[in-house]
Length: 311
Length: 236
Image 1 (cartoon, each protein chain N blue to C red):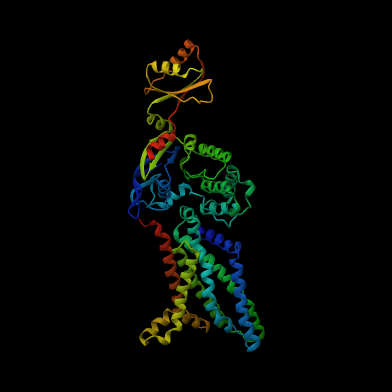
Image 2: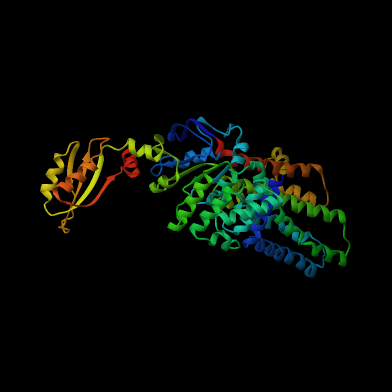
């Protein structure tokens, strides 16, 4: 659906996007991840035909964004960063304006508008000026205009910024539902968002593509060692610690007990890659008559992956 | 074509959503009305000559005010990004916006029609002259608006757009007033460039194709420049 080859964008000879290549399939939700100024927005501006690439090319549904720009633009719905909208129009007027520019006429226009108002829950603010709306409502108007022509591809630049937690959940659900049939590219620097919505993640840093994969793949490939957190109801920490160290495949044991909670002893047990000794720990606890309060595998979070790649 | 109309409607409405349209029409009628009425009562003359003598100056101040927001506001608020990533061609954007400003100018100019009715009650109306005078006002205004649209397409700052178009328009106006200082070889050229010279012709009721060509080429030239300025984002 989207085909990007050696994409480069120079701003006065400094590269904002540096030789990026990737493809996106239909029905994929792609998350663009990266620190501020990494080149996410620039890439999106090139995909949506706002500015041309300096080198390389982008093809969307077989059309080149530079030479067949009009065909590409018909197929894309775009929500730029901060949802720039006409402040002096009211929501209804604005959606009508966008629908007309998108070539939606007559009966279809009113049914599409009704649908969008319903999906983005704008019913209460239809006759308010956009300039008076809160950030969350503006963002939803922006989403409504991006989807009004039922595009094959949605490009959303930080779609959930400025929304409250309930709205964020709503918008994520909406994106997930849309992503079943459509191709969605969204950028964000909120990591849980990527985990919650995206099928695939691209991490960009200083204009370069540094990682590409599903959130799970990224987590496991950047996981140095398996970590287990175990907590016992017991006082003799040193004894427990030394017994744990004797187990096979254990690299190190860290005491992370909180000193004020003297009845419990908590440890982070670092294991060899790919090993799992939860059963052994359980048996040891039974044997020694320690009361096991808690035991779980610590995941290398996407945050760690992100930091490792971009700092 | 329908895109031009959609943009035209939206822009025209936004003139009336803000105070611009009301201020422009009110002040325009107040000033022209004053000149018309003072001629009528003080000089016992019922003609459009009075208002027409001041209109080039009114336009110099007010038309940059109408056109300054057309594109610079979109640049400032970032809405330009959404507009140009919709399936709309650049020339449709420029023309839609230009025609909206033109429609406001027409509304203001045509609302002076009661003066013509007054003249027809009090004296003789020469239809040809009246036609030339209105055509002159509209064409001069349309040329100023094209210059203003260009100035607005160059910047994201409305004040800069206003000052740029004011200066450009003022130069076109001033050339005609400077003829005495110019060497004779340049007079004919300067006269042709001067916006006022062509206006005077039309106001006398002489509708000459040379004046029409002058105005239409000025309008096309500056609209083309605006089109290029809007397209500058596509430069690699």
